[in-house]
Length: 242
Image (tube, rainbow, N blue to C red; front, side, top):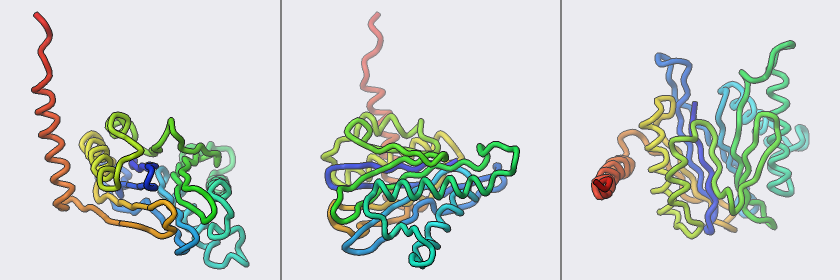
């Protein structure tokens, strides 16, 4: 299991993902689930992945390979004219990988994977998509300003309650930190380190990028501060009338 979030604010896009993958309680590993393609001044593309590790790695590797020699291995993610066409390309690669991985007569469920794709290509607006194992996708909008994949239920309530499109990048990090901390405390299959990336609208370059390890001082401040704040808020609520 994993947990990844892509969130759209007025200032741009913010992405966060955990790095835990496991095949049982005695086989836990760390794998990055955030991949970035950047052509400075022209495009920034960010892909978050959840699901079968072999599938997600094959999808990323195939996209990466085709971007290295686009003349020979078209289509290339570095040549797509729009974010919509980029989402279609990723969806096609997902279907291709799962189709090749599924033995005849078996369902593709065991090889399933989902992705969040976000970024901006010069001449277009920043966009954010959730791409399903079947290759189809949905786009974020005013009613769905953030997209989640993996273990979503524990971290969603704070996003729903506290999200505001006018948030600064710093405020958005606090919001995502609380969302991830709630998930980490509720499900052992999601774990540190956490990867974070900012993309500022119309900058066409990767902004702030950081990995938060278990001993990171800021993460511990947020985690401990949120626990204290929740206890204080609970204590301040009125008792049931007698």
